[in-house]
Image (cartoon, rainbow, N blue to C red; front, side, top):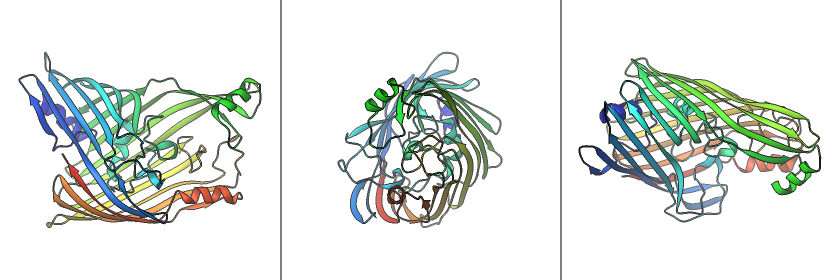
Length: 402
């Protein structure tokens, strides 16, 4: 049963404990494993060179055999910052900047059955990640066009497309199909104002006074689903959708409902860890789902991510990736930060790299990014701020799995 459960999770690429996880304890009923990796790198970008943490993490995975072919499972994962905190701001969230040595990445528990599927509750990878994860194999500059790491390149917790907070999720498989359904059950309320340099408390005071420039925003439940079709041993097709709603109440009493929606599909050829060719691509269309580099909500956008690599017999794996998130002009929902309706937002970049797989758990790498983004605004200060968070760069590093 445990074997079948693990196979199901690997098939949808959502299990976060690596295959090399070390077994700490096992009896006739319980199993405990530790997994994760340390990733450290030297990077040059935005005219600075520094030693930084990559995406280091450590996790504990638990499983317990129950009656009638049921099993219980739980996982907790923390991000680890082994090189110390850093105050430099990098583009595209290639480092999770944290003051703490440990910070929460995942945490969930649930039940699994070979026939009836799996249900889990907690902070976990969203159903949408099933659709687009196959292009996310650049270590330093992973994709930021697939709608996963929303809200200015965060972890996708708010709307459940990345490492979603407060998710209840159901997974099952039938023949060559894997299915995922989820609901994000949360209560979130905040205040925002079309005024620069204002705190949320000050904004709430304006809202309480009836100022129409202030808004009370409720962003609560979201819902998502995904399907994966394993057409052949080499070809995989994915599709999915995620939806939520903002309920906006303005200081003058007027209201507005704003839909957060993303949907799309992906295609993959091969296995990233196997010799030979690997290629993947996905496309999505979104509405009020993500933000630009100034934190302004994007009304409509189209995102495309592509990734192609080839693993040679000498365990060298060169790759190239290309990503574009195109919101065009007139993309900022109004009213929002007094935005110029002619602003243009197109995040676009390419990454080339080489991974040397010393063994399956030890990888040395070098990666370089070339930026082709197009940001335009009549407000030159805002344009400069958007351009600052996207830049060329080069990095080399070392990943040690355990």
